[in-house]
Image 1 (tube, rainbow, N blue to C red):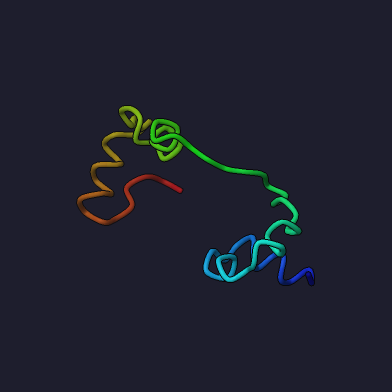
Image 2 (cartoon, rainbow, N blue to C red):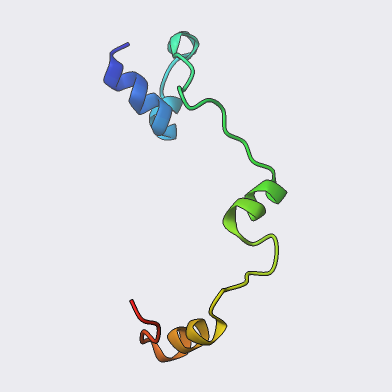
Length: 73
């Protein structure tokens, strides 16, 4: 398998589904490894696991509702 085909198989599930069992068995493992997150870990990683706090609530509210900057650069 050419290097570009290996990379394409890693990132393109449709292409990977066209490979026969022999090609799949010769496909090296992805260098980043297997990545599987539980729903809880995904929520934590996305910032949805708890209350989000800001250090400048007045500025955040002003920016969110007025669409302008209020804090100095």
